Image (cartoon, rainbow, N blue to C red; front, top):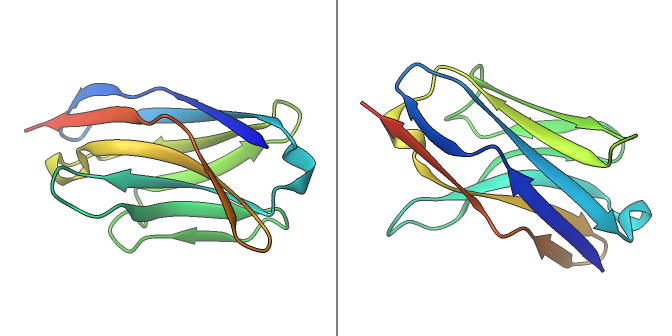
Amino acid sequence: QVQLVESGGGLVQAGGSLRLSCAASGSINSINAMGWYRQAPGEQRELVASITSGGSINYADSVKGRCTISRDNAKNTVYLQMNSLKPEDTAVYYCNAFRLPFFNYWGQGTQVTVAS
């Protein structure tokens, strides 16, 4: 089992920045990838960014150039730095951990609201 705790959401003006954190605990050595997803009201949950245990990184086209995913292995924490935020970035952001072959673990979510 893997437990994930997110923090860092909040209300920000358009053009502002936020950094989300996700602290992992439990069977963290078994994690193959971690990522951030988001879900806006009435929308499906979508991938924002991911990072594999080997360091490969993937971003959604909508956030490329504005967001950076990183990890601190010593702290078992993954970060999502979000810059130049737009109102359409408003959503609940969820931390995800993936373990082969098909296990997904989720945090409780943190609200990000971008005011225009």
